[in-house]
Amino acid sequence: MRWYIIRALLKKELQRHVANRGGIVLAVLMIVAAVLLSVFNPTTVDSGTAGGDLVGGIHHCYIETNMAGLNTTLEGRVPPALKAQILFRMRDPVSVNALVSDAPGTCCIRLNHKTVDGREHLEIAVWHPPGDSGAVAPYESWLFRTFRELYQDLAKANLERVGADSKQLTPLPPQSDDLWAVRHSFEALDQETTRLASNNPLAQLPVIEIKRAPIGASPLDFRSAIATAMVVFALYFCCCYLLPTLNCEERERGVLLAQALSPASPAELVIAKFLFYPVAGIVLAAILAGIYNPKVLNTLFFWLALLAMSSGFLGIGMTVSTLAKTQRSAFMGSMCYLMCVSLLLFICSTNGITSLPYLAIEFHGPKILHAAVTQAVEPKHWIHLLATFGLGATWMTVAGWLFRWRGWQ
Image 1: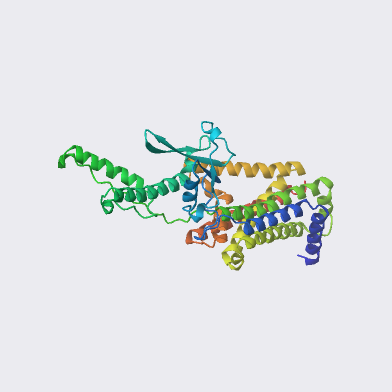
Image 2: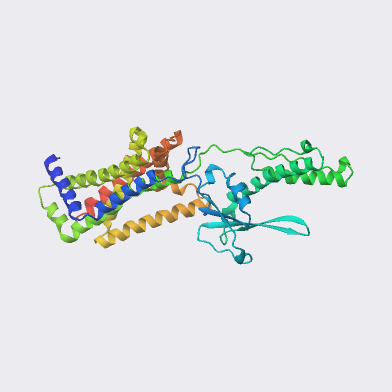
């Protein structure tokens, strides 16, 4: 193994990328995207969870009323987590009966105050995107809870006005109880049944107790998921895209054959490629992860995860480059591999197939990288790390064997 030859081969790879700056431009764009993801974070709330306020497929909810005072009252009760998503506007009297039409990704809750037969009415109309009524649920929950609080205060005032005891009203449940409406529905049914049966014990209903508690898993952070995807793509781009396409380009132009006839041995040629592309991918991935969370650069698990993923992607990239004959076929091979693995993981996930995904490095890699980026490493992630190293070693062995027998053809 002669280091001066490997150094010359590494310099050759670097000069190729400097001459053809497409890969460098894409890497710079990914870094810029990571910076923007880190700087512009309008959904960070006091809880510290970034991206958690991207509710459903709706990014803005319009509250449309015909009363300016009602708008002011509701606006003062919007929680901080929804401040940026809930917008208030006055209803246009001309379009009272018109179909609500807003931009994609928005919804509208129209409040219409009117008087019928001398009694005040408040009509609440919820307009949601077609086929996605559940996306409005967070805004509906806040609005109905707010109106329940407002009506509780109004009921107390009305009772005191007529001389009744307002203290007999049932107090509202705490803000953290989001099942209050369901619980109240069961209680009202039980009270109505008891009243109609004249308190006969035989008509009593079983008591319903509803509880809700979080499971022992952290919620998926939108920003950390994007950061993890960018890190994975950086490794895939360098090892599974650049390496096969440029290696096949050398084969098409006869550069690979010229290198085979040079003093450089096959092992030195392979080692030079093994050193350049994984290192470039690891450096780019580390920059992207460091921009999102600088503390991750001080953790051993993160560097081991990058090493395991890059070794696996390198083996995949070398396998594609040895099987493909042209630069175009290498590109298509890389994309077809990515599509096939994505479809395989999706089908297994939707059909409950648990064993087959363990054979894909793309199943283990994102898990360990996400755990490293979010600094939430658990014992199970070390098992995924070992599996990634094992699959990486398998791909490297297959790639080395194929390159030995087909790499020069």
